Amino acid sequence: MKDKAVCESDVMSMSPCCSDPPPPFRVEPDGVRWLTPGLRKYSCQLTIDTNTVNKHLKLSDNNRKVTCVKEDQSHPDHPHRFDYWNQLLCRTGLTGRCYWEVEWRGEVDVSVSYRGIRRKGNSGDCVFGYNDQSWSLICSDGGYSVCHNET
Image 1 (tube, rainbow, N blue to C red):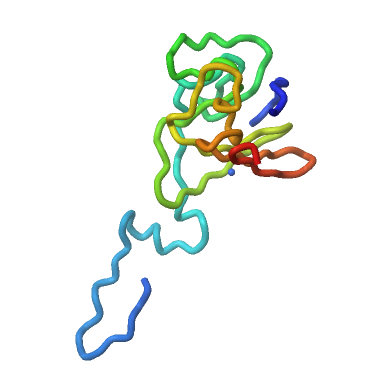
Image 2 (image 1 turned 135 degrees about the horizontal axis):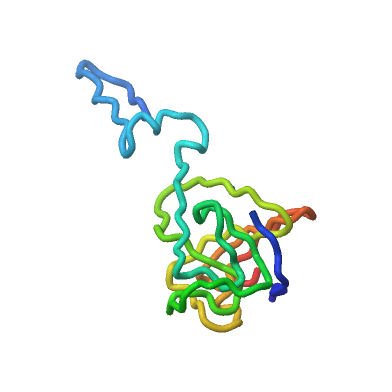
């Protein structure tokens, strides 16, 4: 189980044609963006679900920056809030291919999770990467590792 120490965190196919004219070139689902090479065409804006933010996570920069702090923050009580682990969820779920970037320092876990992950208590069922409901990329100056279902 990972340490609960306070940390600081701030990532057409064209087919051969016959005598018929080729089908129209489709750039759905989101317009010409899909013609862009590389990963950025899959970028998405993530919005923090403030009802899930642990009391030791301080939000700033219009809720775009998260910092672990020792002092309890004044987040109102909410049944969806993580009550033990320094974690939060984003408001909108991800589907299909998604890309985002995270600026960080110290140590940070960048995770994806099913919305149904447990949020109350200190068991592995509540920690990103320590259950079958989530995956976590652990980033530190010493390197990177991944965790899913405690492996």
